[in-house]
Image 1 (tube, helix red, strand yellow):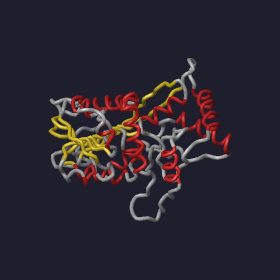
Image 2 (cartoon, rainbow, N blue to C red; image 1 turned 45 degrees about the vertical axis):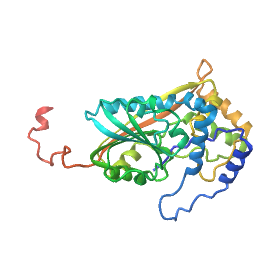
Image 3 (tube, rainbow, N blue to C red; image 1 turned 120 degrees about the vertical axis):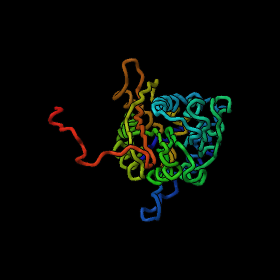
Image 4 (cartoon, rainbow, N blue to C red; image 1 turned 90 degrees about the vertical axis):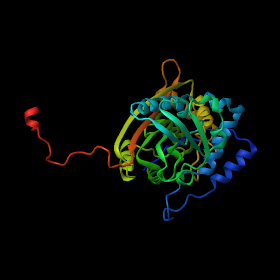
Length: 333
């Protein structure tokens, strides 16, 4: 199992932020021998980062960088509309500002429950931007059953939030437990090739300038991981597919600033609080040299894994037993 990590893209910090980051960076990673999931991400820090991003300039900066989640939400909605079923209520897990919920229409869904750990992000936009009824819950994506009851939901959707969950297998089991029989789980999460251009540029720059590599980027989830985890969590009729969103930026600096405004800064335990300015400058030059386009822009690749699973039910179609076929394949071929 693996998770997406974005770089810490804050070259300059305020006095308060610098002190907070320095103290957080000193926290040791928990022992592998502890009971429960190994903690990779500091969820408290992540919530603060998302709150800060949502409140910057009255939320305007946050709205300017909605483009990525809006695009992925659009592609999720295409898959959602392919499911010929109407829902009274869906849970939008890790909803952010409601990128997916804003696309819901009343002829498909009556109510969306938005659950998000960042209170500022959850309440950034007014109810008037949603066509369906919305109910907002300030809760923890790692402890879903604390906010909703077992077997209470017809569908759970999640758009680009699971990459910050420490216990992904546990979260998937909780999602299954929260669903009614034959309930739907539809999600999108970042895949292993996300931001590979930025990762390679930073690694090469750090080796050149500092003689080593720091943990700015952690391993990420791939398709086989997700398929196996969905099956182990008890979902049936699985569908997993991969897509890419490629975005052009003037330079690496604009990319990193947008990642910060998205609330996607570094939140790994034991992280460095800053990156040296000359290392970042070298990474920017390497990025442009290795991946730059003829017009001077640089590409950023976001690999998206879309996943669909269903909670088991007696009414679901099942494969026939081995040997039950009545047509010889040799005759067909």
